Image 1: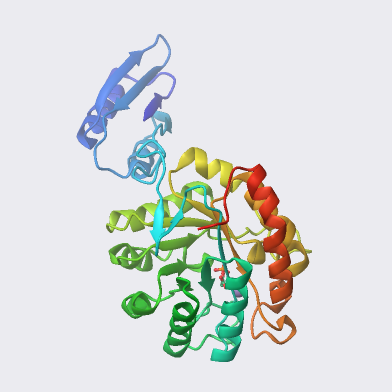
Image 2 (image 1 turned 90 degrees about the vertical axis):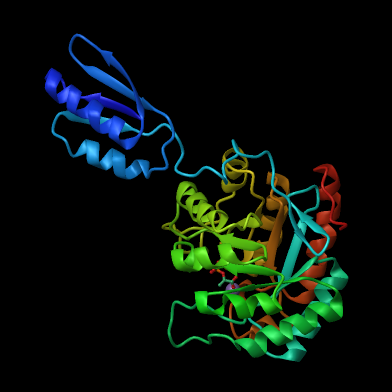
Length: 341
Ligand code: PEP
Ligand code: MN
């Protein structure tokens, strides 16, 4: 932390700031200039530096406080080179380009089984499907709940694929853990801290979607909450952010992949379905995800998108999904990645 004193701050005022910094637990390294004094505060007390900064900046004789360290520690790249999340023998964060696919929502057993068998044959590694659906509208379908979880688990077992599904409520984490292999935290819940703490206690990997409004720093701080609960099996998922564009549902921020690779050791996957809201754009952005170095993708696919209960417009048909998988193979080879688990 660097504290810049106001021009003309008195020796008493400088001493006051130095004492406050020491009380926070820092060591001080002042530079007494002719006109202005700058105090470097070093050391790493367990402290919310943003609060310390706010307290110091409240003093009229402090001009500015600059934080040097990132507000997250364990999910930072400085802590570790790379995390590999293992799910039933699949290594996410390795040279495997992991493909998760399935419907937005589990609607019934026939729909899910048909989808699971088809995407599995096409080469998907993990089955997705929502049983608890967050919706902007209270009038939307909110999922089949436990019945949906049971269908998902059965489809996963029949096809030999692990399953990923969203958990929205801290009270449901234990139940969802009984059925799912990966817990999904949706964009709307990225800053639901009680939920983050609860999945931090779980012994299942967590895929943390980026809040549609969130900066990388906020996203990584949310991941740090999960880590601090004792769960290091975290996958980040970029799913598009809100911008002024209206043609697409969201703006898929592919910058996130190289940025997160610089900032963190956690694997990152891309959701081109919610990132665009348009099935026609999903194949191109899936290839872009592979080209930009993502660890995988999560894609919505449905046997009959025109009758899908949710997110039909962005869902690939099973045939389109198969074609997409075929188009990934040569690209994976060029990029030094594999689609073969
Ligand atoms: C979903 O995966 O179906 C979903 C609701 O995603 P998001 O949280 O990104 O909107
Ligand atoms: Mn969806």
